[in-house]
Image (tube, rainbow, N blue to C red; front, side):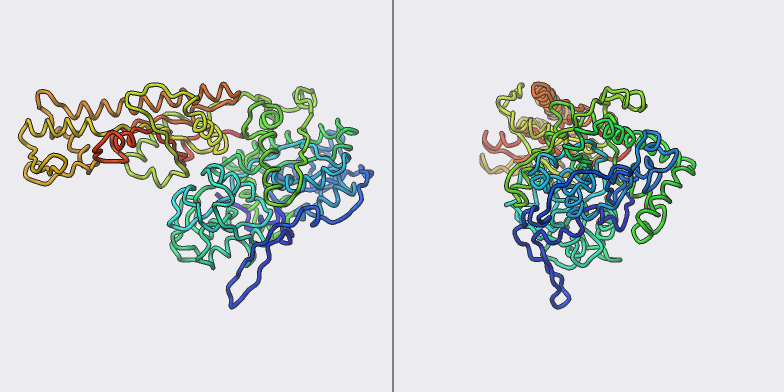
Length: 623
């Protein structure tokens, strides 16, 4: 996955003042974490002014692929004849907004009615903009989801659960604060479970997370944008070798390529301007959504056979951001490839769908919790959701991609095949991002929300957050019955010998020692028919029955989760969740000696798994 090596300006480059500072001592960069300042103190005092300059109307943009659709709609920094916005009757002047503190000052002063940032960035500023009813924000547009932000970890950290007690470095108040919050929630950890080192910059400096991670062995993980991630470990699925600047053993622990609904880019409008100019705001949003439709099609043409209009957009992007940020046009293409557009369907779902776990209300709750709990705000002052009429002709008669009905995101057969292949090949652990289990009783056939509601809710929330990952529901069985039948059959056939006293037996198969706790070897022997032929015991049938039962239990759990989600008014994509029967192959206790030990094997395991891109169905919009 390509990305822009200077994408740092997408976020709060000057927000180093939020409490983190650094110095260099003996050539070693050190970041000292302090309590964040209130966002209001950083913005400073200032009067609220009215938005009076509307011809042209000033609109901020940031360095991010989603803003390329804004450039396309406007035809450039000023509205060009024949552009989408000009045809809508708009007259806009696009201005850089990477200095988010200055964005907030300009917004308050009335120089622009808009704020442009990620939802969690806006959340940090919510107390400032919400202090006056005129500047209280209305979220009017979701532009994109990020697919180009990553958590890189050292070799010993295998899953998100392993972050407990570890030290993580990220930019203070940057795009990854919200992503870290999502990571911790997914692993059922809190901010107090880890140690934080705040970096001054997002990238391209000695005090960026990637550079600090490279220089300091005491840092266990860091957040990084795509170019820095590639520099640390070589790629999304690679492991750093230690050569060419990579960090030996470093790999991507989780990425927004899987955690695809973590970083949402939005536009917010002042309440006074919104109320007085709702038609203008609607046209601004509609023009952007139309640009998304056209840019997506041009990108497809470019990747298939080339496209002059798309090439022109890449050139326009380079002209706006500069060659220092976009050295070659392919970097602009990579910048766009690092994001997924929400489009009209995504905006309708984000703002209006009840029970949407990655919609406006869920993001608002999360963003305000982070702002208050991390010290950026004292009070929760939320945004208004978009009140635009999405059934208006300004949308439906103008746009072509207006179907909001969700489709299956994954090819179920491909997912099933891949999960089974990974399990059989022993590679599932390497693809697992986070996992947890529930246990059940012998002969249990029902999994009710009364007993497992908390776990079901966790699955539902995890599936929503990890939109591009698969949830494997893996049923496990206890091996006791299979072991008993193996011993009986082996002794009846005379191929298995037993010596010693009860509770301390030793076994040999055809004169060679046989360890009954060596489950993998035992399963292979059973499957090859080594114990077939005994009149009253058939371990191969018992093995298959355990496998069938474990698969059946996994399917029961899936059905219970889907039913649970329905009662909560939450939609689920069943293609994202794959029930798998493991049988006795992976016991927690390989040779149980009592019922309590046997019960530890009676479990259903949930794994969030990275799957190959081919397992997913292509989609232009994510919602």
